[in-house]
Image 1: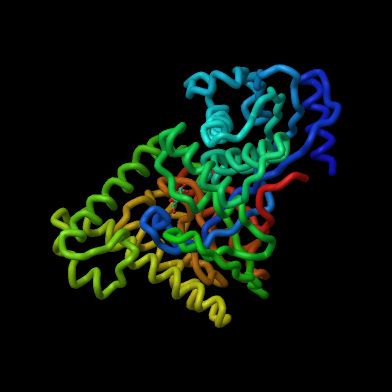
Image 2: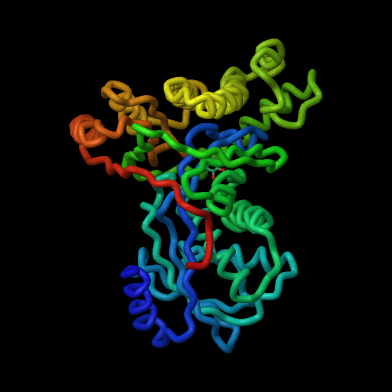
Length: 389
Ligand code: GLA
């Protein structure tokens, strides 16, 4: 484990001690299908990746928290007291883990000693593979372990989501934290975001692999656009609730939606609601297709998901659409779509194993010609959830 050794050396350089440190890892995640419906009470189908955010930690004798990220080394050490858990703009990335400590304390869990923590993430930031939920969850498992807190993973998942909602002001759903907390090697998770019931689905694609492609687009307004979509869904739900007794958009099936959609006045809001209802149905169908070993059907549903996110939900944009459309043209591609919040970030494709190199070369070159800069490609391996390592 060279990485652990390297990080330990770095820890010692930054904090001048490295006795009795502990190591933690929370993965990133990729969502296979079921996009933008976790906050609409729908089904999602994500999996944890085999890379993510590492944290090395050592308890202090006082009540100061000192955090350092190897990814943002120019920011230096960020330091605060356990009594000062407030959002501070100049604390930058450290607000994510700080928010988690705050929520733990608000929930009555005893965090009564300071910590020195070094973070290092190998999820590209802003790539839509959930670097934020990953740092939140690594902070969660670290607190649990360092302070002997008796808490289940699902409770921790909910607290990490609250940290992002309340502390960071991003109204995210539960999918990312759940996938990162509960991930299991070689399995995707079918999660009912309404009840939090879930089941693991083994992903054995035999002659195929999951390829993630990063548009490398800078995602400026992603958070505000994300919150805007949430508001639009709420508006759509209110419209439908005039006629129907439902709690979530995803309580409806297609037919019920089509019969009642005109109770949503605004045409744009109607399209957003349509996406939610149809995407939920697609996700259920896709998981069934996978269980029936019908990978082509799964791929077809991925493609339809992208079209819906492009035309009805409008969260794709030129770079994501280009990358997906180029993928669709390649031989050996079973399906391709954007993944995560959108507005940039990554696509996920299922590609025949023996055509992967060709896929990366062709799509990579064509993308660069159209967009002017390069995309990055990773063949994904599905890993385990957040844990001590
Ligand atoms: C972001 C959010 C998730 C989910 C996805 C879209 O990743 O954090 O809760 O809404 O976008 O599916």
